[in-house]
Length: 501
Image (cartoon, rainbow, N blue to C red; front, side, top):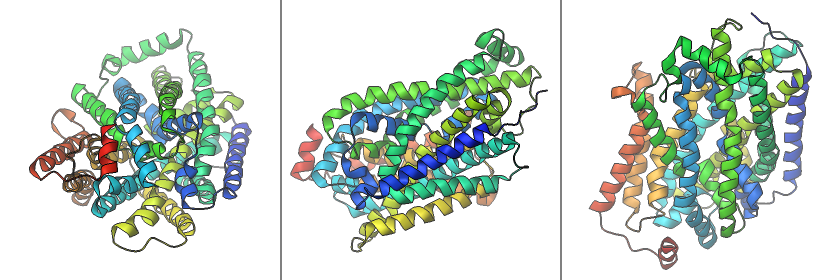
């Protein structure tokens, strides 16, 4: 067995990365003058910045920590999430991107609930969509915080400077940095750090690809042979989870991208609608390179354990940190650890921004109150409170990072995909259908999950069909049925014209 060598280099590099994030937050502080700057970065991003911000938001702790853990545990099953996630980005652009950006222009929308309220002419739609975002944000933020805690714990262990540090302290330290720069600069700080984070993620993915290959004399072929000799099913087209589970993931992650607010709200931030044709290919290219980490780290750790070169991992989520501790040079480990934090924090800051907008900008309007005075000040306070709540949720959950990420994605998909994707492409879609669909989606994800936990029970659908995919399918059927059964609502002229484009 191989013990992890001690080195302070990775810790120093990650500390420098944290310092850079805070410095960017201070830079953005002087440029964040109002709620428009805080929520949508002043709507002045160029195509390169938007593309990298979009891919950075998608590539999260779910992808960089949860993903390798799924490959380590289940084989190639989770690659269906990766492939369908890339397809989902394309579908989201074609179904939502152009019309949402135009809607933001004609109705001055600062958030997704803002845009949906304008499309449906309904404050109830605004309120339910804001509640869905606030609820899903907690699950997704908890994912990122749990991932940061796993990575930071491994990093501190590798440094040899301190003894064993608990996950609680690691989570609190990482959350403090995250919340700090988000409070300072909002969306401006988020997209500025995304530029740095995106470059780090792509570089780290390429470096790790070659570092993993070097650990096996026969390269990746040897690693795959080792896994196949132990469990050939793990390397089959559906891995160990089976065809029904994988195909339900394909449905959930491909179509679900159109309801992920951290993805679709990037369409509110770029300068010109024409930029969209350049944003999509750039996002796909950078995202595909970054997903290398998902596959290669999981495969490597499973093969190394089977060869007896590493002790079996105590938790699947340890796959990525464990490889960096054991096999990477200190400088490479530092770069990749920093990239792991970049992946995590680039998504977490987007969710903090979304949650703050839902709480401060959208929910008061939905309940008939006056718009909040001093929105910027209250948005910063809401960011702090959301960070604290998500930290508590992460520490109180014993689930895999991958489970939390999948649950967050499922919540957004089931609650928002019909209302967003169909609403921006179908004139017959109305507020009644949107509200019914969102209520169904929330009940089928959060409601069922809470009920199961209270009862201490489990719910497994036949043949391993994913519960999130079932919730999305149910909310789609409800939306279509209600829209067909209720009278068509006349649309304002500007909305009607927009849907013709």
